[in-house]
Image (cartoon, rainbow, N blue to C red; front, side, top):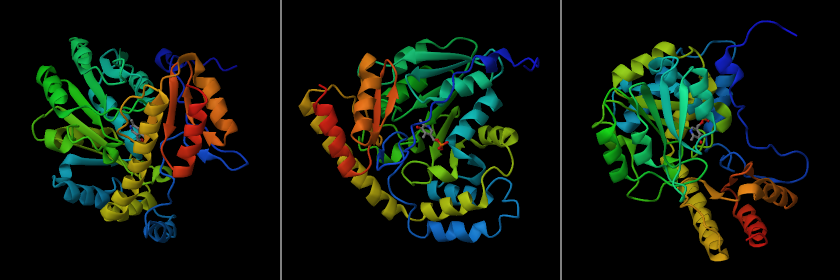
Length: 352
Ligand SMILES: *Cc1c(COP(=O)(O)O)cnc(C)c1O
């Protein structure tokens, strides 16, 4: 037994529970909100090319990808930071702006990683309960602000429940958040949003100097395995993120894959449309079956099952579906292949 003391804030961290991985027989993996498709056309060849140079370090901060993202969004390169997934950038944002003992506010239940990242930063994590329709309660979140609050994490669409934050709600929220409190808008699922009233950070970024947006290539672009995401905001904020970021963490393979993927908007959008179609059918069917389902705006649906969450996930597994149970709360089911959605609906029908 080692006697080296572990920081109390680290000893108290909840463990990150990743979605289950398939083992053996044919299963549909609906447990991690990945796309069921392979990388976009041309991406694999680019990755192979970059792999041949694996004896070399990549660019220190993925400069080419940074420039490509800036061009794509029409912002200056100084306003973009690239990292090994949005998770890395969320951690950097807290490392750059939050002192131990400060408060970090987020809705709860929301993204699994938030309490862990807040804990690693030594922050006091404040999870504000969602509304009973699975939406972020931005009013209660702003009411929870105290003089020690340094950052607020807003997940839209919210993982795992699904609803997106509306633009008008977000503007009311930003109007009461002090301008020296960082607001992070986590838009990992923004490409799946169909509600035209939903917030879109690129309209908001110009108006709010305390706003950072986080996006990722892991979801709609189908590159979860390559680990690449980005943050956009005022250059002063981005500079601080770059100052704490680990150099070389985005591999040349990931950088090239993301650059190629960014150029294939139409192919990406077509896949997204397919997923959204399946999501719509799934949602409507669940409602018709009698389920109360929060409005899904990402590539997943949420069933609030309470104590039945784990047994329901077991029933799904027996039907060849890996889903993501949150014990005592509910089950998140990623939208992937239409045939997997059909099987899921069959299981759900036996359970209402
Ligand atoms: C998947 C996800 C991310 C992105 O994670 P990566 O590190 O980019 O793979 C960020 N936020 C939320 C809410 C997510 O669900």
